[in-house]
Length: 212
Figure 1: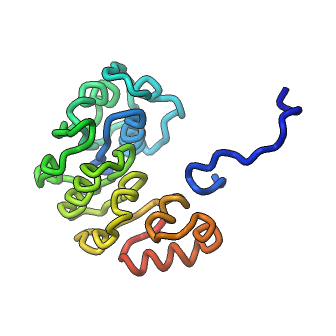
Figure 2 (figure 1 turned 90 degrees about the horizontal axis):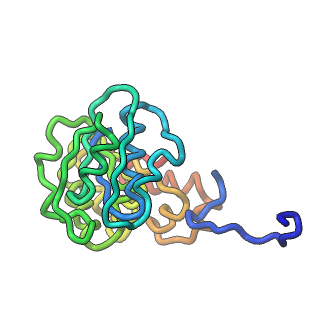
């Protein structure tokens, strides 16, 4: 009975309890992160929480379909192995299937052709954090000459070498939660929580980015 259960600390994976473009995504259990981002850029609205539940999990093959209202042109760059599933769910988007290594984007698959005729880039949702991903993110950021949003695993990928941010030739917006910001500055989540405004301002000034 819930009322008889003792109070306990909640699981806190993001480091806090408070509550485009080219999109780079990856395979695995968080593939829907890239799809959700594409949906938002096409429609300007967030999809339902379980809109892409059919592609969650780690089964080697998934098939699903989904309709997105509205119109727009969004290019989604993602590993070849999930192209058919993602394309069936977001017919409004333009997909760029890329070479991969065990589900992660290969560095050499990132080339200038991906960035032709785009006005913005989003990189990070569901992309993963292995060595190949880190190199691929750095290469994509080096190519980018348009306003760029770095989110989620994109931030984790640059956390070990934030000098990358100073080399980007376009305006950059970062959207870290407390845990991601703690990794970016090498501090604890408690430190970030207790100094949110100063941490955001100092990081933005030091790295020439907009911190949200």
